[in-house]
Image (cartoon, rainbow, N blue to C red):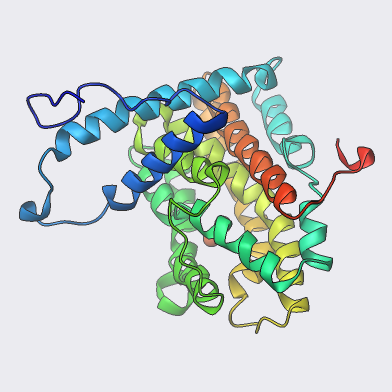
Length: 312
Ligand SMILES: [Fe+2]
Ligand SMILES: [Fe+2]
């Protein structure tokens, strides 16, 4: 590969626009590996040679990947309502009718999964979790006042309202510690890596700021149901309450977060500029689309087949 004047590779990594197969897996693994070190707080002398060139290369590749995703989900955004109330109703209906909603994976985790299966599931999920707090912090930059205020309130909850014990990230870390989870780009399914990579790409590129708003909002909206099932499964398997607090908390708290997000963030941003509705819709659908692909991949691992009545 040719190296350019600022020390980076001259062309964008291959396979960025592929959403299936070996090329997809390879690109997602490489990007996930890059993302591990990308946002690390550093000193000037710690910056690796060619860092600027590498960042430009990956930034281009990410955009190629996100644009391929936009094309893939375009049919799902046809007939978006143009008025604010109509759009809000469309957005809120994703909770029931969006990709991956009502997936039988979750009742299985709640009622039947073995400890080993639950551990495998968490191994993938922890890896796909890009850090809601940081994604939120990056997304809120230069947002209008009302939206920014709600993002700040949400962030404060992520920070345990100022107490380390209540911080959401470390809470997930305690569950990961209990299960001894050490996922890496090498041993996680590419569908899950792609989900985390997408969340980072949307937050990192300002051209996708409103996509990021949609993706974060749809996480708040759909997480409680999934978290409730996972918490039930963890309880059934004898995981102590302190260790499964992350899921117990999100089964409840995100209901409130979602209501506030839709009212204070989505509504106000779309009311100010109706073009943002399309971006918010696309971001939300990308997140759900990846989620659905993860659930399908996990079911394959557990040899769970979907009954036709559950396929809607
Ligand atoms: Fe959270
Ligand atoms: Fe939340």
